[in-house]
Image 1 (cartoon, rainbow over the protein chains, first blue to last red):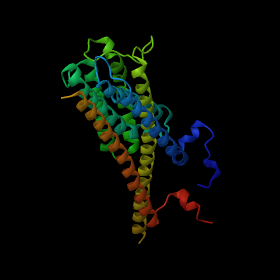
Image 2 (cartoon, rainbow over the protein chains, first blue to last red; image 1 turned 45 degrees about the vertical axis):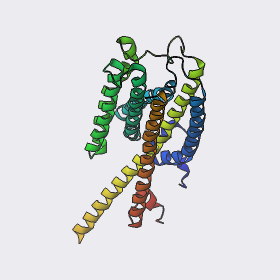
Image 3 (cartoon, helix red, strand yellow; image 1 turned 60 degrees about the vertical axis):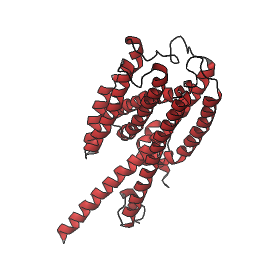
Image 4 (cartoon, each protein chain N blue to C red; image 1 turned 180 degrees about the vertical axis):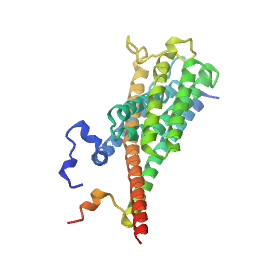
Length: 256
Length: 55
């Protein structure tokens, strides 16, 4: 774009989708590169550090499970902030952000559920238990699917945006339930060992690969999120163009 | 089953899901790009793009 007005000087300038697209085009290769580098380091650490004296090799599952579970909650938080952006500030990109994040969040929740199950079988002796933590994460997964379905079911993006924003905010109550479920109820799932008021209680041997993988997964989320937002903006542009074309075709048909 | 099986299965499952996501984002972008190009070829453009052409 040649217009000088497309320069981004303050945060609110991002509200212009064209400016946002220009920024994404610049930023995404760096984000993707950084994500790949961090995954390379994270995966190296995941497979070269020692196994646990009780969990053995299965501790390596944690390096995927914990970041995926963390992202399943962070993605929903991003969606809740976007929902606020839609309802309070009517930010034009807020709904695009919420809609683009839902399938990504669903995928990370699925990864957390699958890897948790694969860890549970050798360590707990069962694939699944209906304890508070596992059940609340499963509910989160269903909520993501519900939000995706709701968005697809409505043709008018403005109406879909409002309804989904309200539903996202109502569903946000599940996030603290997931986080504190291991403290409020007697669960088979162990309590928090990284994000605690008194600091992490796990050995640095496991903490380092976990942290690097967590940052790598977070960057992966943001890379996919901005790219999915770009796709959503293009999809809406196409819909508007088609509508305009249909209207002008109708008008010229009337005139003839 | 050995621990190695569960570890491998976890990483394979995580990789498959992430690869699926990346593929979805990439294919979606390609399809939207193509659709926009087709519209442009048919002379259907955004107002901002049209105003640039007119004197």
